[in-house]
Picture 1: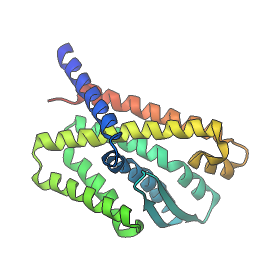
Picture 2: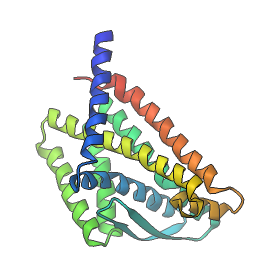
Picture 3: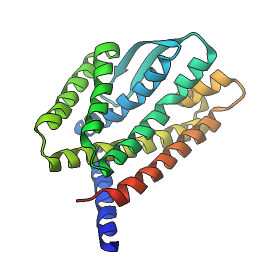
Picture 4: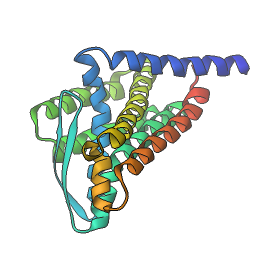
Length: 227
């Protein structure tokens, strides 16, 4: 049992390392990193639908993204502003949870639904549409033609990228909230929304939730993923 756990832990770490290397390869790395951008912006959009409206999402080659929304209440804008980082961290954890139980099809369907929502309703810029079509096609291929081994390893790579990117992007915002509090993305937005709670506080919240989901992901991914 101990040897099996050691193997599984090493497998988990191996895919984390592969994802870090892959995402730092020029052009290709950014292409794969956009998967986290899609999840992040989808988090904003999904929460905005509860009492608000999503106008458009743009996805860019440099992995940046922006979601244009409007809200009928202060609460709607507040929760929408805080949803992106939490949603991407949660989906990273959920991916490992499904993979650890060999539930590959439900995970692929969830990711395809998010891609489909963005493609049909929200994303209108050229690169965003290109990315959604090509990545969506890869998931459709996996769903119908991929072998169990290919599906598992591809999903492990995607889950690892999501985990790494959710932590690194949250850490970036955490640093910016202290060094450039007026240009710290969602942390700045939440600070402006609340008026009395500074960007630094939200930067700490974002990095803490990312670490918490990462630990939870390791517990299910590091010890339950089998051969």
